[in-house]
Length: 269
Picture 1 (tube, rainbow, N blue to C red):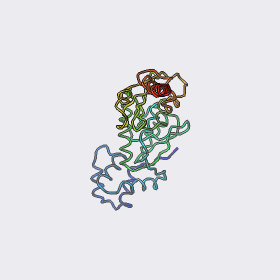
Picture 2 (cartoon, one colour; picture 1 turned 60 degrees about the horizontal axis):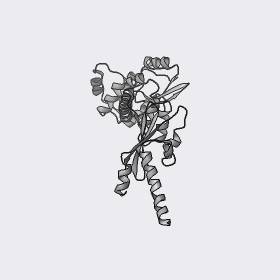
Picture 3 (cartoon, one colour; picture 1 turned 180 degrees about the vertical axis):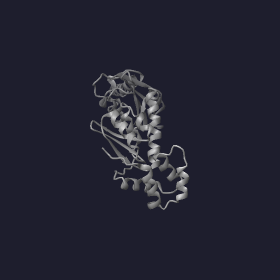
Picture 4 (cartoon, helix red, strand yellow; picture 1 turned 90 degrees about the horizontal axis):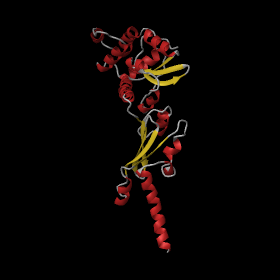
């Protein structure tokens, strides 16, 4: 378990000793009601007592905690929605990894010991804390809270173009949407809680003949995916799995395949 010494007093001393912060300005911060570690770090950066990257490095070094860059896609956090994370978000703790024997979180401050104990008791595993700068953590938390809201409202998780994330989210039957490039256009792939997989042609290459656009654009095809059935071939192979789907798009693709064959047959006569 990571040890969490009292943070606020030590950080105030660090601001004076390491960052040459003005004691009067620190006193101004101390007047804030309900001052805690989060407020202190945010205010120190806001009042330009110290550059946020430097402050993160100082906190990491002083408390001997790993410093991480969380500029990677926040969408990866979606895989955690099958587990409650409200208590983490309430304390500005960003979940990184859930393991059977450890919970890894990122923040820009050191949470109180009791907060950490409550989280550990609730999950039955120790907490491992990583440190990052204020802005990227707050931005990721903001986006994560919005995705949590969408999830709790039963809205599908938006996986962007990340297929691996789509597979992770849908593995337990959760709803998700994915967009995939296709012939210089876009295919919208949706998986709902009834395990229905739907593909819709959202856009096409502008140079496509109008007849092809009329045939494909906005058309959909779908099928029910059985529990335990591998979703990957159904998503990855657009053309080869058409026969497994039903709907206007499947019929349109089959027409496009038959048309050249009919033309070739007429030419040979």
